[in-house]
Length: 195
Length: 96
Picture 1 (cartoon, rainbow over the protein chains, first blue to last red):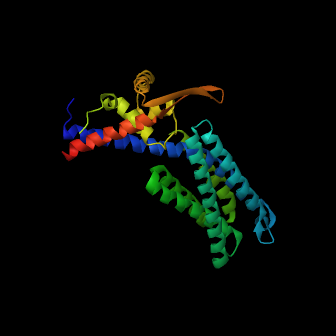
Picture 2: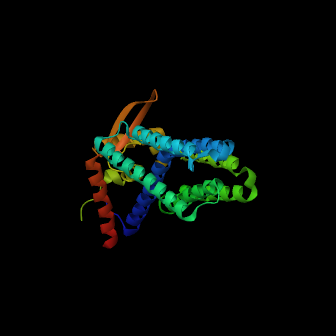
Picture 3: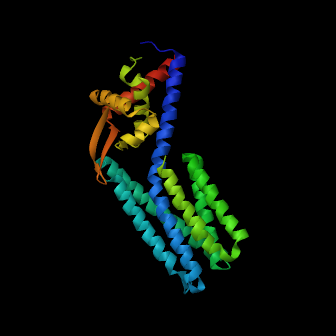
C-alpha cells in the first residue's frame, strides 16, 4: 500500500491528537480522588479554624491543620498504592518513584510556606489561610499550562474564589473557604472523574 | 524505508495504539476509558483489540474491581516497537 505525504501527515496528526487526549484523560482520572480528598480536608480544616478559639492555634502552631495535612499526605499515599494495584511490576516500581517525588513536593511546599511566613510574618492566621490556597491555585495553573487545560481552569477558579471570599466576605472568609473552596475541590474531583 | 504496517494503519487501531502509547510503559487502560478516547462502539473496539492482540501488539487482562468485571488493555513491548516503526515510516514519507 502506498501512502502520499498528505496521508502520512494526516496520520501523524491523528496520532498526536489521540495521544494528547489519552495523556490528559490519564492525568485527570488519576488526579480525581486527590481533589476529593483535599476538598474534604479543606472543609474540615477551615471549618475547624473558624470555630476554634484563636483559629485553633496553640503556641503558634495550628495543630488541627498539622494533623489534617499529615493525614492527607498518608491518605494520598494510600490512594496512590490503590492506583498501582494490579499493574505490572515495572509500573508499580515507577509508581513508587512517583510517590517519593510527591512526598518530596509536599516537603518542599511545606518548607517554602514555613520560610515565607518566617520572613513575611502574616498579621493574623486568616492571612495565611488565604495565602496557601492562592499558592495551590498558581501551582495548578502552571501545571495546567503544561499538562492539561482543566488544571489551568481549576487554578483560576480556586484563585478567584479565594480572592472573592477575601474581599467580599472578610468576616466569614474561613467558612467561605470551607464551603466554597473545599466544595469546589470536591466538585473538581467529580468533574475530572467524568473525563 | 520499511513497509507500511497495515495492522496499525487502520484508523481505529491507529487510535488504540496511539492512546496506549501515550501512557507510561506497562500502564493498563480500562476498556471503557479507551472506548471514550477512541470514540468507537463497544463491538467495533472489541474486534480491533482482538486483531491487535492476535498480532501481539496489545495484551488484554480481565479481572474484577469493586465486584465488577473489568477489562484492561496495555501495549506490549512488541506493540510499542511496531508503533515506533510505524511512526518512523510516516516521518520517512514526509521527509522524502
